[in-house]
Every structure is written in structure tokens, then in C-alpha cells.
Image (cartoon, rainbow, N blue to C red; front, side, top):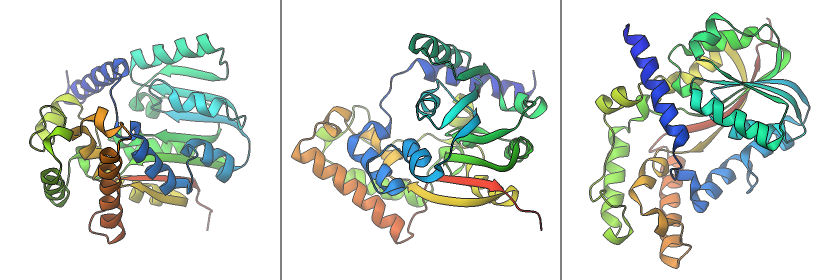
Length: 299
């Protein structure tokens, strides 16, 4: 078995396992979600609804979603009334099975879910054009970004759009030395009773861990926006969050962080304020971006 095949098997196993988990991600915290949504839309409206209802503002007949997972975003789009049909694929068999079961249970008939890898997509792309193509947290798992995006371009017509909401930070989701040192200083300021068990000291996964468990995580993330700019006209681009909150949230006791007590509100507000100041003064770079691309006009 080749190294690439081994990595593909690790990625598939990782996402099969993830699809069965109900872990609390950083945006499960109400304060953090409010911060991210306000960065995107200036309101509390969910970013995907805002994007379609307030920004795109036109019906989409056929949409392709790459790396759909269990289909959470696809179900939202299917119900906006602005998307007629969605083709969606993911490498994880359990994720696709879960999405199909949900579609059947909820009577959603305008989404087609398929088990497929990005490599399969490149070698055997759909034989149709799409009005919109989406990457929602999947493009940063792609090694051949150029090949995937060139394939996407071939499936687009003049009025088509490519939409993304992606991690664009350090490769393999590793923290920069500056980010790591800032989080370590923040951690010293938080009382131990507010810290998750096992996180007395700051913990970050290293490269060896990432390559063993999910070698696709953020594999070429810093190159996403530069490559998009080369292949498409990036008509809309917005930073949505920085490197502090999504890395540090796992260290906090989640019951406390979501308790709405004065102590919890104060700590969460301060963490958000710290990230905002660091980004505003360009001490750290944002880790996430949302954007819309169009085909480049011929010269």
C-alpha cells in the first residue's frame, strides 16, 4: 500500500469516528458563536442564511457541496428556498449513511448524497454545470488544492459562484510559536476550577500526532486564499475568527463556559476581547475566512 493510500485510509477512519461523536466544538459556546456571526454579518443571523438571503440574493438551481460530512449545511441550504437541488459528497461512509438516513426521515428530496473522495472528484468529475460550488470546512483537508479548484472551475458557467468558509491558518492546524506563547500566558490567568480535567498545562497536538491521526487536517491551509486568487476572482472575502478561541476553548470547563454566570460571561468576554485586539493590531493573523469567488473575466 502506498503512503497516499495509507493517509487516505487514516482520513476515512478519522471522519468515520468523528461522525459518531457529539463533542462540543468551540462554536457550541453561545458567546463565541455570537462573536463569529457578528464578524461575518454584523448580526446574530446564522452565517449561511445570511450569505444566501442577504448577499447572494438569487436562486440557485444546482449546487455542488464538496466534503459535506453529515450534511448539516446542506439541509440548511435545501430549506432556504434559494437552492433547488444539491449534489453532495464526502469520503466518510458513516457520514453519508447518516445524511441519507436524515434526508429520508425528514422527507428532504432535493439533496443527493454520495460517498466520494477528492481524488475521485478530480479523476471523475460530474458531467454537468453548477450554479454554485461550496466548501464548508473541507478545502483545508485537501492536498491537491489546485487540481480540485481547476476541476471546480470546469464545472462552472459565467454566472456561477464558488463559496467557502474555511480554516486558513497554519498547516496541520498547528499553532504558531507566537500563538502558543500567548495562549500559555492566558492559561496562567484562568483559575484552575474553570479548566477542563487534564488541562492543567496548555496542550497542543504536534506534527507527529496530526500525521498519525488525521494527516489531512489543515494540510495546505495557508495556501487556500493565494491559490483561490490565482484561479478565480475573489469577489468577497472576510476574516471570521482568529487563532486563540478555537485553540483554547478545549482547555475550558465547558459546563462552566456555557453556564451564563457572571464569572463565565466575564471570562468569555475577555477571551473574545483579547482575540479581537490581537487581530485588529495585526499581532496575530486570522485563522478562518469566508468568501465568494467568480470566474475570472477573460482579458
